Length: 191
Image 1 (cartoon, rainbow, N blue to C red):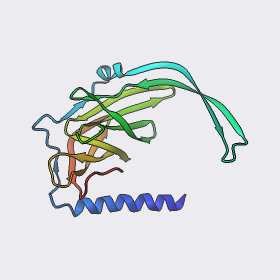
Image 2: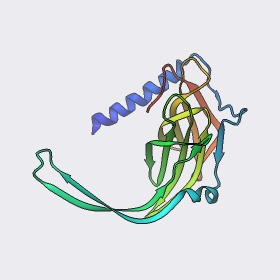
Image 3: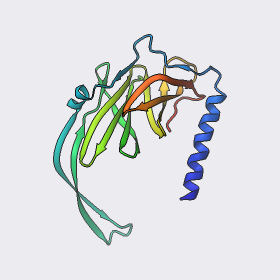
Image 4: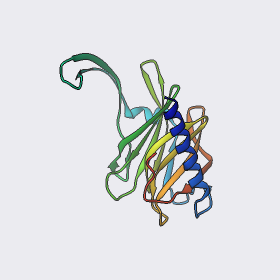
């Protein structure tokens, strides 16, 4: 367990080192073309959550196939994927801090498009509180660090397409003021 924490810390420090060595300077997120859309209206976002009470039976066995274990999970909520330019995004990463959950999305193939959903889990209730949609960027991973949420992915606009965003989480909402963006070397950032 201690080794895993050391590896995570090393990876985080390496990521910051890459940001510091980036050829282009850090800048505020540029939203002049409307490529980044933030929705902090939880009432509007709530239409994407379906409350359910479905059961899911799970059957597993050990590596020798001798011991069968069965148990039942209860699915209490189902979240539909967001869309970019009429295309449905695919969920690909999830990070959780206390009761906050951040889910990242991207498009399959060479076309860029992505999103992040920020949710609050309270008991069996899931509430979608905030969303960021990027029309020209895949979002491949999210990571909470205190009141900051880091996004990693790939986007159009540079010879090396890998990037990292830093957004602020305030009152369970994603805030783009003081957000930071940096290009990284390489094709895509995945975590």
